[in-house]
Image (cartoon, rainbow, N blue to C red; front, side, top):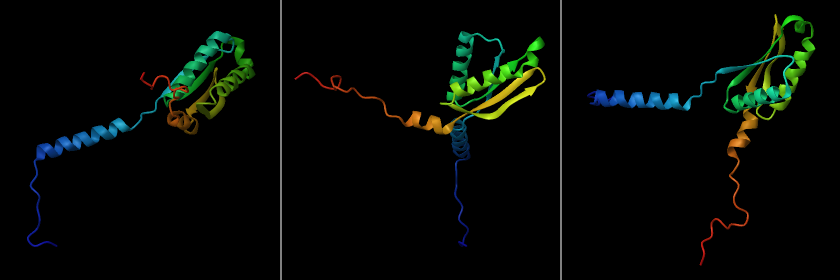
Length: 143
């Protein structure tokens, strides 16, 4: 132990400001993952299916989890295989950006599945270098 004890005289206002800046920086670096939901119907058309599935892939690309819900009405609930087929085709089409976290489950009149972003699939996409001009004509100046 030091004799006499060592003390540091500080500006408390500056200290509080720096602490606030560190807390703000750590909040900025953290990612908040939210669960997005996309609802489908068993008799969905091809165009609507493609549009919704493209949006699901976009959500997964942003790092969000996506809950897919198939809503059954009337007698449709007696044909859960139609919903399972739609969920399988969604999972197939977004395999590049996401993976199935919770498999298809019938829950009353709804069938749900949860997709999570696939970190391994997204990592190569971020690290990929930008393509350069092959002929180099953009970089050369006339002499």
